[in-house]
Length: 157
Image (cartoon, rainbow, N blue to C red):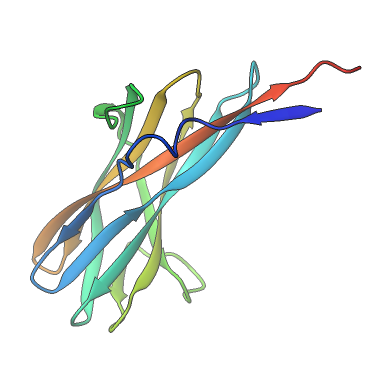
């Protein structure tokens, strides 16, 4: 039997952000992962975003940063890894691509994939992905928080 212990995600403000250009706005979507206490770390290789563009906009990813922190009150800021970008999948597509055109009027749900990173929640550990998008000729940097939950094994009766 397992007891799921969620971080205080409902108590702390999200680290997910929004960034806008003249034609496009991209917002990070909070993600979730879990691991068993004393077991392997959660392995995560994607982050979710919502894009709303006023005109068809070509998007690519320039850089992905895996952010970590150990504070319930402060969003994660330490760049612990820079996983290799793998592709963008816009909902409705069958395969991810290195370059996509965001449909209008939107919003479009997108998944950015990258080399998996590991996250292990102990107490007040916070994780996020900072992604630098190229939206046409403009750069947008957006954060998507990752809430990692720890499952606590309960003793058998």
